[in-house]
Amino acid sequence: MVRSRDRTPSPPLHRRWGGRARTSPPATPPSPPSPAASSESSLPERLEHVKAANTMELHQIISQHTDGLRDIIRRTSEMNYQLFLSQLPPVQGTAPESTGRSVICRVCYSRAACMLVLPCRHICACKSCEVTLTHCPICASTKANAVEVS
Image (cartoon, rainbow, N blue to C red; front, side, top):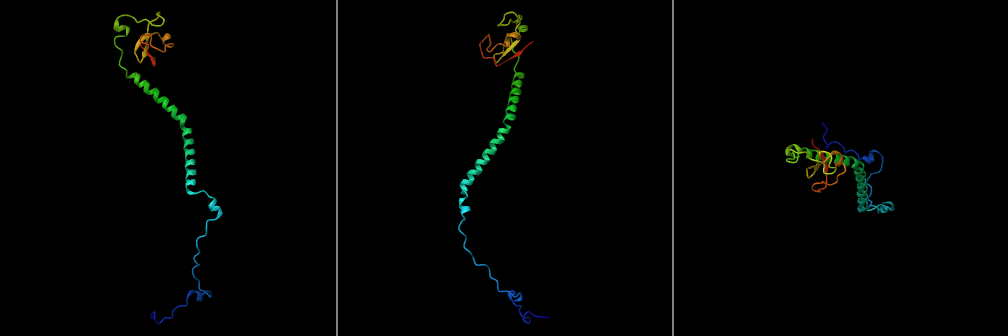
């Protein structure tokens, strides 16, 4: 058994390979920034550049989807309005059958009134005359819409 004391130490690596002893390279001080590095923009300027690029990209994305969003908003509005109309309570006391007399068109005075003006809910015009109305002929409120009643 060979003990470590009995063994002769192996020569250093530089002697085994026939070269000189190598040492770590001398520490070199950091070099001053090159002219190319100094011409680069500073961190705040780069940040502004990135923010501007991101803003432009977001504007492009928004403009690509604006028409679709407008269409969705328009359709949603129409559906909400139709839902509103369907939930209106029936008009009482103004229909011809409830009063026992026919209601004459307040525009032409020749045909039966069959159009309910909204939002006031007066039955005051025939189908032909309702198209020309902007205001209710009874109370002068602005006409938002009209619904045919039978």
